[in-house]
Image (tube, rainbow, N blue to C red):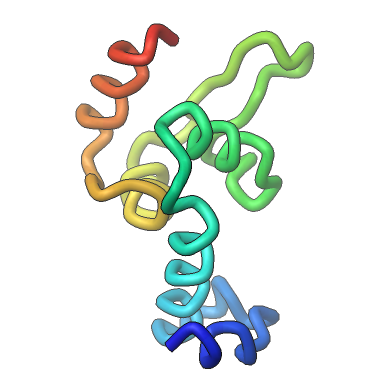
Length: 97
């Protein structure tokens, strides 16, 4: 599976092709599997792909969720085991953010 993922072009991610989204999710999951919550959150916040959903403030001192539903549907399933916003917020509070 790993070699298949490495050989797939990711140009069509977000195009509606469910296979492409699965491949992208698997690739991202491999990259962040070893990271803890703050590491995963930083990865999400620094990925411009998610700026319409979650992003750092202009001064970089804080961050904000702009679209809770999109976060649950598009981001959380890729980076975390949970798809629920409430679980995400528990982690945010638990880690002292």
